[in-house]
Amino acid sequence: MSGPRTITHRDADVLAQAAAARLVTAIADAQAERGTASIVLTGGGVGTAVLAALGSSPARDAVDWRAVDVWWGDERFLPAGDPERNETGAREALLDRVDVDPGRVHAMPASDGPDGDDVDAAARRYADELAAAGSGNGPVPAFDVLMLGVGPDAHVASLFPGMPQLRESGAVVPVRDAPKPPPTRISLTYPSIGAAREVWLLAAGEGKADAVRRATAPDAAPERTPVVGARGRERTLFLVDLAAAGEKPGHR
Ligand SMILES: O=C(O)[C@H](O)[C@@H](O)[C@H](O)[C@H](O)COP(=O)(O)O
Image 1 (cartoon, rainbow, N blue to C red):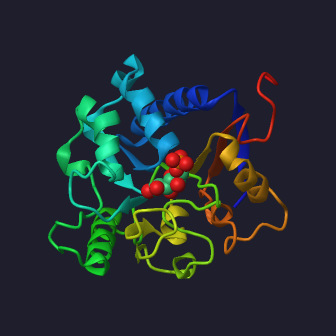
Image 2: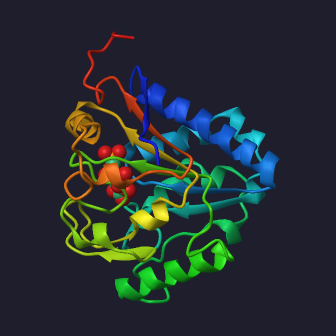
């Protein structure tokens, strides 16, 4: 797997708009090639801004949303509809504004869902849903694009530095005591992330400059810098703004 290609944008707004344009093009290309597309969404400010940019762009009508499978890379284990859930943000930003097939929007279970507050059972349920969709491809489908916001500590999804989930071989894991609130979450693992054709890493703002710098250091290791373990099968893009790249505004 080759290393990420970094593409730097003037600021967070340009990054969100450009990533949205890239996403709708990737969906259209996948549908042209295979008749369907499979995308994995991320929570966080930049991830949601990308969806909002796409949701408010005429370009959103360039794809057949009925032929898109939507998955999540991680989710906060909260009741359905909680404003802190990544699913809630994604629906408000994009999914409620396009004609998706509800049966192809695969939200991670909520804490008031079929497994109640049993986050282990909820993680197993999502792993089963992925395996069913994988239909012989293996434990997860061949995602076309998997987006991951990058935390200031270089976490991606809910894979945080030093936590045992980084070494998990299963497809989906429960997370307790996450350093980023809320503490209880569900997350894809590196094997699931690595099943994606493309992984797009999103980072904006000077608060991410250290994480981006560490991620591109030659001796970076996933244990301390989880973002370096996130690689796509065909391509990995690091989509950043000047501030996250540690460059001065106006430099471009
Ligand atoms: O559930 C979550 O919190 C996210 O999935 C998380 O992985 C997020 O993407 C990063 O923490 C970046 O978030 P920001 O873009 O808001 O900094």
